[in-house]
Each structure stands twice: as structure tokens, then as C-alpha cells.
Image (cartoon, rainbow, N blue to C red; front, side, top):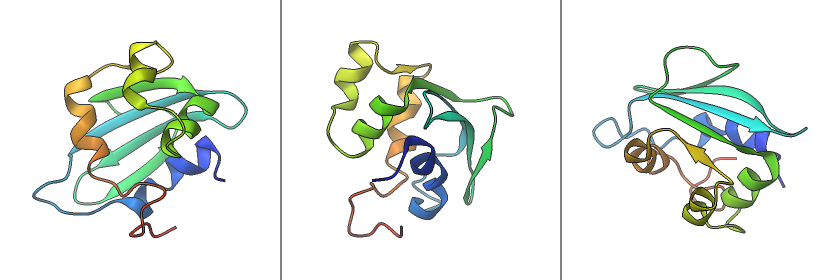
Length: 112
């Protein structure tokens, strides 16, 4: 099982890369816990991940490493985690297009 840090770093491998339907922007992930960290995901024609919070984000996601890992593996409902405050998202309108630009961890199309 990948850690929260490894999951975020896997975004470039899971990027669908459809320029007409992919999210375009900058997303900050601020993940507490020993398996977390701070990351900037940049999505343009491709996806890159940088350690640290750089550039001006369109979305900021704050959570713990365990909650993020549980969501990515389907063991916790993302919307419920947001509603209960386990995950804080600065821009809900952009979150859905962002998440839809990537294959899920458990997807057969996943390149991990």
C-alpha cells in the first residue's frame, strides 16, 4: 500500500493527459503526518509534482496522511470527509475536474 506521500508523487503516472478534458491549474496538498508533506501539483499539458508549496494555487487541499490514503484506496468517502472537516478544500468547484483528470489508484489503467 502506498503512503500518502507516494500517492501524491504518483499523479504524473496516473495523469490521463487528455488536453481537451483535463484540468489546468495548480493544486497545493498540505498533508499532516509522518507519511505526508507539502506538495504542488501542476497540471497543464502534462502533470508535474514539486515538493513544497510553490506558485499560486487554484485549489488547496489539507488533510492527514491516514485520511488521504483511506480516500485514495476507497476506504473512506471523500465527500463525507470534506463535510466532517477531515479534509479541507479551498475551491470545491475545481476539485472535481482535477480528480477526473487522473486514473484512480485501483484502476486497471493505472500505470503504477
